[in-house]
Length: 514
Figure (cartoon, rainbow, N blue to C red):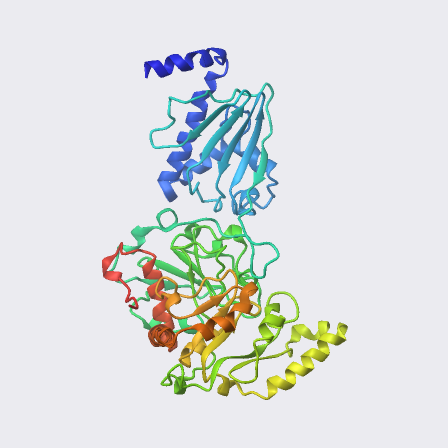
């Protein structure tokens, strides 16, 4: 230790004028650590820090000024809109000649939220003099390779830059993450679940009542009408006739920043039904449209669109006892999401023999394109004639069933193919398959990116019969256990919630499929 101090002493001697700032950095980082470790109980710490003029890196800039600099609005009921409108981490850049200092902070979850992760303070100075301070339970490490940056000669305003979460620009169904980053250890109150041996669930009747396969939730052993006993609170967002709910989650009586709440939607697109991102808080999502770039593993749950029809009369047929090898009959979309069904790779799989892929352009959204483009209109008319020559029920008698994305990644066809004893072939990008913590989908379905549709036919023709039989057997097991009825879908949804606890409550262990 002495030798190290001797080596550092010349540098410290040259920078003695700046060493006084070190305790300030430590104090800031120590407060951040306390806030992070305290969880929801640290709300008073958060508010006190925001209202104070605590300097950052010795710069005369308070958190309130940072919020203002970030474009805070008058309506600040949800916290700092500068952060919550941008889900990625924020990098606060402060000029402190001769150095530039940075503070990397995670997005805020709302007015009653705290830092969800450890923060990193970093200053870069001339002559390759760099210092990095990482918050820890013990505070700052006193043995640093370089001193912190000096305070600026004049108070400086921070420059706020946002790191946009990655997504594939220009690809269908790709978008940046919109939810605050959360995990069960940081955004869940386990103490609410101590009152019983079962996972007790309370469901609000606003903005919408439980719907689809949740309609009979109150008949299960998991339901409680006493919110004081509830471990989970379900919020159904599919208000009839509305794209966005007119009931904001903050108005729910047991909201508490979203702790232990699950926001549920069966909507075509999450953004059509969900509340604004900055209102999500600590709540998790359970939705039929769950994107991989948006999904928070172990915290959110993807659920399926329930089958509109079930084809139980076909389940007894083996994979090579069926009329067709692979089929699809459905709508074609001419613009926006879902145009993969219009591609030559998709429609070109049709051979009129063992592979039937037929589409219809009779969707209300296609009218303008057909009117403006005579070539496409003629093509649609030819497709329509072929489409009419095949019956949907007949095409379900197929070893493989195509389930291409349409206006959304998920499809009703997925569950319908399972009901018929077929092997689903998904054509989709950026999609979290339903009940992924319960089901080993790689043992059942095939999945191809939209850019790789040309591989589908040669892949299924090359598959060994034993492999196809194994897949069909597991698919049938999945269907019968989790998809065969509204009751099965409800139990699968509850079991998916149980798996989030990772065995923390042994009596709640869900029945998994072998």
